Length: 200
Length: 194
Image 1 (cartoon, rainbow over the protein chains, first blue to last red):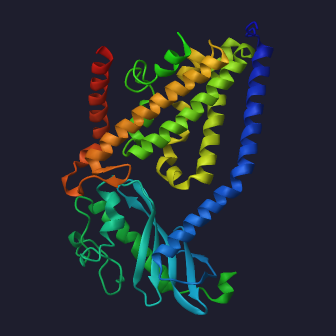
Image 2 (image 1 turned 60 degrees about the horizontal axis):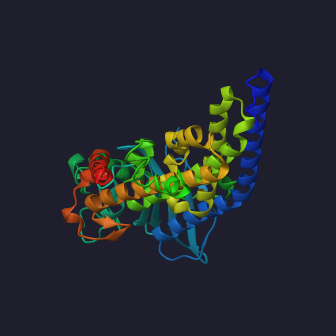
Image 3 (image 1 turned 120 degrees about the vertical axis):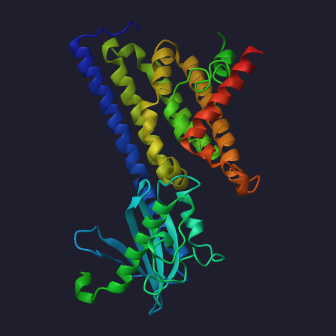
């Protein structure tokens, strides 16, 4: 078959057809995968909530709350066993990581202490800042572990800044950001659950 | 050149990473572990084969002056498909590769093969070329990732080989990518000459 000539009409028609077919194909795949992507995201969120809290039966009355005016609101998921509150899972974040954004799911028990956390998203340096998930949950090292503590009884600052928590070796900035995010999560706990009226 | 040579040239003789030095951005960026390298390589292979197929089928219908934009649209379509399918069915791999998947569009390996091979050869040869190049790329990325993972975190495909106290962090950091790549190119050149 001879090569098509590069005339204006040929070029316009070709590009039109190519983009039309591409758009059609993408629309089709998007329809096919949309539900699966939603399901995968939901599953990831649920498994993060389950891993940061003690066992619970259901999540109900999730809400969003802003701890400071002008700040993006945090998502809070209260977990219950029957009618007893087991704890809150708070999706908190900070923009002051060494590479910017860090998202953390933090679990706060009914007594106000942290029950666990899971780093959902981060771009910290591999091998340094990226160690935050194991570093701050190491129960053998009481000065770096944050589980079972809360910012009222323990100073949630790195020791360099006069706090009670040991920063990750060579990753003070990541450690500061991490503690800032958790402090913010705790503030949503302190602010309490919204009353029935404000929930709507 | 017969089909077997056409297929195997991607591994050593014309390896996209070690010899042609194409697609350096994902090569250096995602290879902090072997599994990331493999995932990236296979995603690129899929895009490469599919775009080679389409380009070789429609090559006579595309006027010369708009061939590059047309190829890019074809490639971008397949990349977006890979991205959506991966996000839906392999969320954990998507999480670690996420940022680099859209960058396959501008991976000059894919456009390079479309332009230099698929637009001049028939369907069969183009598929074989895409497969060979893609698997050669996967092989290179996996090898690079494996070396960096082994020295940088003491693991291989997430299996601990030796304790973390002896690792050299440098290898999972960006400079490690350049250093390991240079040494691998050296080795491949030796092998090629032998």
